[in-house]
Length: 84
Image (cartoon, rainbow, N blue to C red; front, side, top):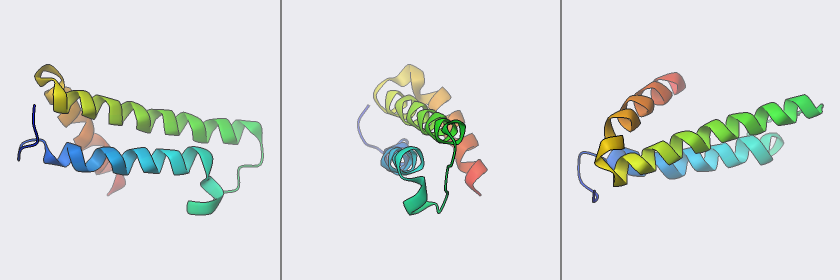
């Protein structure tokens, strides 16, 4: 698939979610003002980062492979509605 009006929202969301995952997993104290004090809290943040990377990967597959477009679209709607 190429960039078209049908999947432009996925193209826009991929770098946003990847950068949010990186900041949440590696620099939560700088961007989110979180202070993880225990190993469990740091691991929880990195698990959330992994979920964000998983969503971004699914969306990238949805952009490039037509069979992944519908699951990518559904997951995009659920993740974006969570942020509202």
